[in-house]
Length: 223
Image (cartoon, rainbow, N blue to C red):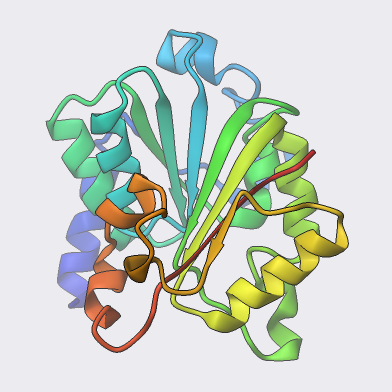
């Protein structure tokens, strides 16, 4: 994508009322206005809240919001030119149960209070295989601890990836925590028992590599 198109999208992002782009320093030093108040002040209902982390163009966020009117969805990504797609589609289609946040995933506990979230989707994150990049893996122990904090008791985490490494790494971590996965499969399109959401929604990235890589899916909850 050319720099002119990116700048155009960044400018459009400023007009979307369903997209939040807080300044990092301000966020760290001052509580985000909707933290602990998403249901009351933004969605205006008491429906469950589901996050898509590293949402990219927001395929899961927008599709799931259309499937489930009684659930609130929030897509989170740091890439403004990508998140533009989901924010624009949901804004123009007047989807009231969806919004987006442009921020880094390690800051999500600044946006959500303890027990505020019902479910998390992590869709095709960078596996960060090099050991020096371990701290950036979205399912490393620090991230899992953060997810457990903001999730309600019994809250579900879904990991969909084409990385056998990340799938196995995450599975090993949760099993070490005494967690038995709800579902774990290394090739979901050869498994008819995979959840509908994992089979029927495909991200831009997934479609690009679907013919050359098997797609894995892991679903678990913190007891």
